[in-house]
Length: 63
Image 1 (cartoon, rainbow, N blue to C red):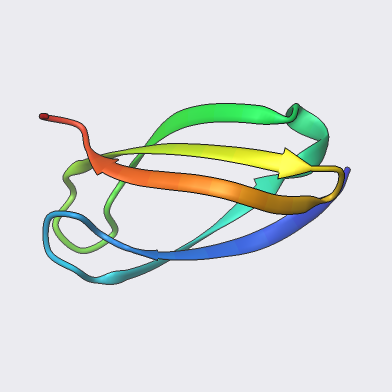
Image 2: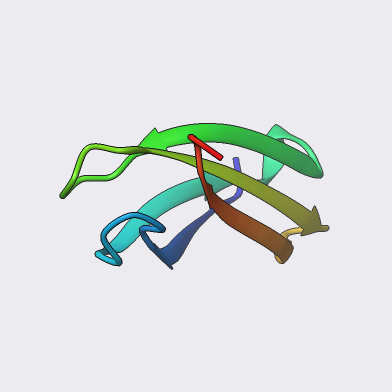
């Protein structure tokens, strides 16, 4: 298991969020996580190049 912490701002309330990502889960991953502050659903897409995060997007789930 290759884990890394990922920080991003909530697209609804701009609160800073931190989640743990597992690079061994595949090169391209997509999931939904609720904001810890406003509880809105956030769509997160990440792409790994080996063990390193190479691309990501964080979007509102309602768009």
